[in-house]
Length: 378
Image (cartoon, rainbow, N blue to C red):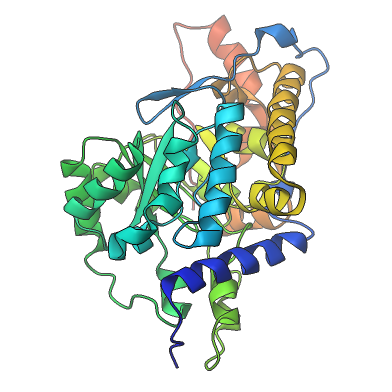
């Protein structure tokens, strides 16, 4: 039975239930299965670490962004206002939550517009779903004077959502049409269920500029929507999909479009792990939202600055002067993540000796090693 809730009430529900999840987080996620090999003489001078990265045509000051969360009600407008203030203070790019509410009702425009008015010089990403037409996408971009557009994929969430969409076959065509029409780069993201290698390859064919793998491990929207139901129980879909590290490993070596990593990023170490697995930058939503609501804007700003400072320290110890240099650090994969890779035929052995391969290539540039095979031979 579909509940007769307004879209604003639904947005408030999402915030309440998401924060409830993050106040009682899972003890472990797949990022815990990614361990850096410590090389005691690898460390560099901290002052030589440069965090800047290029993403979707813009230079970001750090490989970290505040991912899309909310908007569409008075309460969520205040949350966006505070998030925008934190983004302006720290320089992090920020994405809007789904702007479907604005496209249906322009009266809620300011609940999203605050992301720009309170962050006038920052990088701001608009956010729409894959049912959106190119003209609607342009409206969302124009409202925020956005530097890029996120298109979110959320079929699992929609199918559990009492009032959700039920038609999905046209979404690839819509993404392609939007990417070909709008004047800003398009980033396609999942909302917590992951992007497979095949999906990333298809998105590249559709003309998008980057893909945010948005994997399992953070906010579980199947769980959220199931809690909003008063009839059928979909609890068996909780935990659906691939984790963020699994998605990055699955797409290793594809190199068609840049990858972003969100979903289950809990700490600066998780950011470093995501970058080492090939992400261009990592996005954080639920963790930052919970800090904001529990402790306020100043605490969120302090936390973001600490994350940036700690990421620099981690990279210093690992000998990585840039975020991309983390992809040359040796990794050991274990636990459920390693089991997933073995089952999926993903060869993890090259990850353990990446620094040695780099040294060999420098010693013998005229005879480069053949690229490592991604899949384990049958």
